[in-house]
Image 1: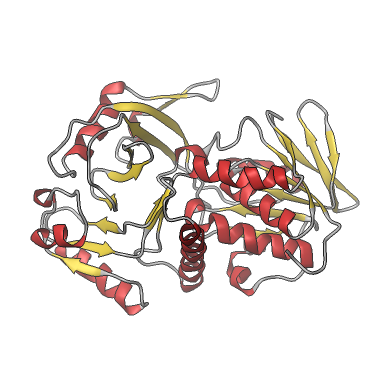
Image 2: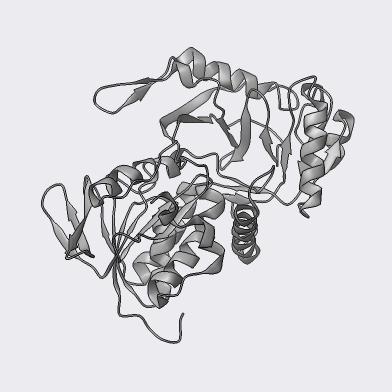
Length: 373
């Protein structure tokens, strides 16, 4: 805890990993925190994230550095108890479609150039690096990133909320739509759709893909590039998979309870968004994703979907995180990013530090919302 306790009263809008993580870090710093959710905790993107902990591929240097710091915080949590079923570091494996070996080699070379642990493997070498993968599914070569991992975000949220309650945080579930209140240009708190008001010195908006719409009434424009996505959880199945797989037709990771979590984007055109805000997809399309995933697993086990969730995957319009205080509305902060899983712990830590101390952290310099002004 900070040696100087904060007297700040902070309202956090959003019960996903970014909101919960920041709330807990604020409580550790001595702030008074109220956390408001539209529905339940982890009910949106956090509850349907593949949550692959990585900084693979090519991206801006500041973004890469922030993601590497994010992985570091998970490693600290993992070291405290390596037996947590919901947080594991088994590496990541990626490959392209046949005929794109040059692209795979170029990605590997780039990762090596920035010091990211990357190994270029032929199909027959994969089994010696990590278990449970069908080598015949790999067309030419694959990249193995040993330092990557995965987390089940709903389990992490539950873990963090135990500390939230122990430290005296206040939780308001099912608040519906929540808006930021402003007086004479400065944030004063939040108001729920039912008319409930909560005063606060500072507000953090961490509403996933809905973040731009929450900020719009404040005169703040944050471009929104959030696509529809789905996460499928399979029924328990016998497998030896440890790594996260990122392949042309399916992304797969282990999940607590011997299940697998499945994701990709080729099925987006099959999703229907209904007038009530719900989504649907034909069950045969869900099964097709499971069948594609089965081809990647050693022994090709039969995979049966147990559940699936559909919604918008938070991605800012320029692809880079949007983190920090609004220039137009002092006292109002934003946390809006793709890679919410990888950045969940580090973002909460750095934003809480800024809110409590008023000092801007240099690692967030290029991610300020003011870049869209």
